[in-house]
Length: 277
Image (cartoon, rainbow, N blue to C red; front, top):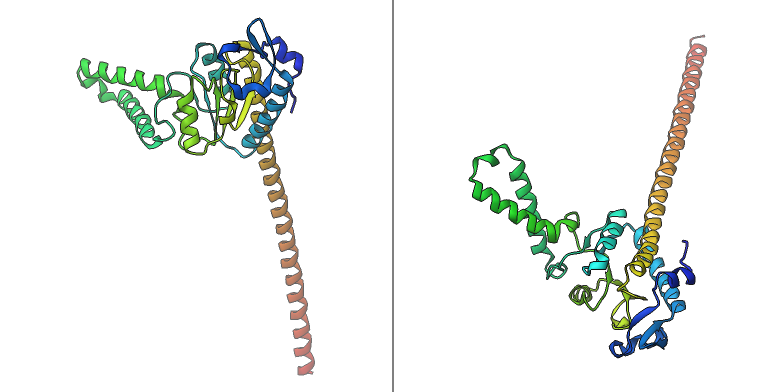
């Protein structure tokens, strides 16, 4: 897996933290220095943590697991959405629906409600109901689509979360912890990295920083999926070759049995002939 370089992180502004008065003491190991009242993140530590997160992401992709991407802040929305779509993963870019993980059964019911409305709207008899009822259904559908449309295909709890800004998305992180779901996150100097399974110390406010780190992580997950598909294709090919070999062996055995039976028949005939003589 191709890793980002120190210069790439530097160019993306990943090293800029928050004001020193807003820092979290547990971020001390990842802070390089203070400059003009702002903490500067040690990008060498960022590279090490990113590599660790990428390896874990690759393993999840290799195992065919689902990762839920979460980022509702303005500068992260589009980046999160595009990244998740590129690897066919669920994502949340609007308000976090409370209980999405801890009350997943109810959330699934809301998704099914949205799907039922879709079926009603595509039914020819939909035009028979009143205009007011059609308008109410359309509004309900739009509301559900806004909050749950990006997780329609998430039929079970995700295997992991990737979060941008754990301070803003603290409810998502808390729900994941309650269910022992591992969390990947870009952690800025104002947050506690100890509550995250795979923290990546970096600027979580700049769009360029978010995009740079997210692209690297997504590429690792994608590589894991591709290797999984390749391995499955190789296994299928081996099965086909194995079955062909077995078929050949079976044919040979049938032929040998046929020859043996023919020779035995000839032997019996000769013995009967000699007896007659």
